[in-house]
Length: 444
Image 1 (tube, rainbow, N blue to C red):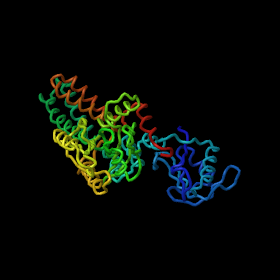
Image 2: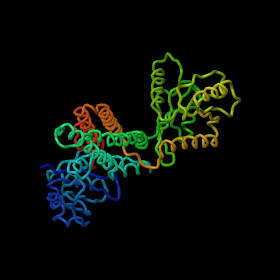
Image 3: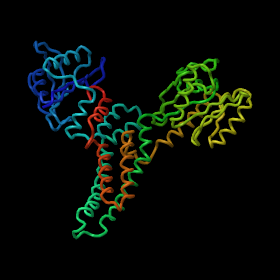
Image 4: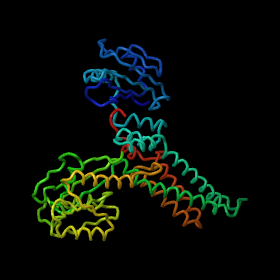
């Protein structure tokens, strides 16, 4: 029998209402001890909560849920309190005195998973919904909480079972009256399954970008105006701007939103050769962040005559030729040629012009929406999903190659099934579960 846990389900501090949740076999006993008696299940009931000394702690609304018809599948309760810190502390102290234990992060949702109320992908959807900052993140998290990935995994699993049955029939019943081409019948099933998983893998990157934010890196030589552009786009003084080259040493990240999508805009150290150990580390970090970014903005000092070396750019990146309010230097023409060589759009502007910054913001919004918008929400949304889908895909592709060696092909199909099962937690090592649920907040 598990122990009974409790935790605040609302953020600390003063509020109109604070919610404390309980789950476990002693929930009913604890609620009765505080409120005098248990209310009817699923009926909000106003009661005075009292400590062991009989003194009133608060008047609260109590919701009582009997298992398995509850969030965790166990007996559960919610205490809706007045939101003063002293009230909440008094109730928590009273629950602890009754022998209940403060929940670990994510423990309520982990119990829901272990009791079959949610699969692991749905549990991750709960965490994503709590963390959602944008409309796109909310829609994606709700889709996953609704079981979209679990439904797809179930469909894939059915196809695997069908293919595996054909292989095993050919191996185990070769001398019986089974069709001679029974193993060959598995090929179209596996081919369709491979195409389905490849489609999911193509879109999983988009799911990760929606969850974590579209990463945009400002890169370029010192004093090109990267920090000024960052501040203008952010609408605040996020980065220090001086005339001294090399002022920015570390990555400065600013969260932004474009049409309901989260983005992370990063100012980076100016790219140049330097003997300063700290600045050199900043340049190394700048190159690393830009290399992993989803979009790079190469900022060029258009008034300079010193040609800057262009960083590695991709066709969807952007070249910003800054200081258009000053007479153009040789660098303006050089940057246009370099941008054309990479197939990158060049945009001439002044970071001091609100109209130019608005044009740059529109260009960024266009790129973010083009990358993240889609007719359908991604099925998979995390690195963990991507790794397991890739493992399953590799096994299935090898099974097709080994079609003549039926026993090895069947084993690869089995291993592909295990990888897919780990997505929803049908089989999963304990350390993976610990990693997933430790990212939750207390009370969820």
